[in-house]
Length: 83
Image (cartoon, rainbow, N blue to C red; front, side, top):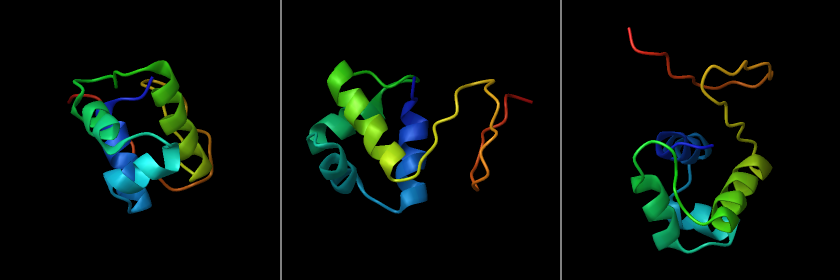
């Protein structure tokens, strides 16, 4: 599952706006906006979510789940748990 914060962070890492992500994923800008407004885990139609995740993957983004190991060799940012 992808969170809204991960989605916004992925766009920031790629240096793209919502319109560009929508084009990459083949979904509408309002769909991206709704996804990014979700509380916690992104909500939406499975097909749209899949398209966005696949578009981010093609662009080089690796989504790391909570408590999942990160074994990739690329640079990135990870949010720590609460102090």
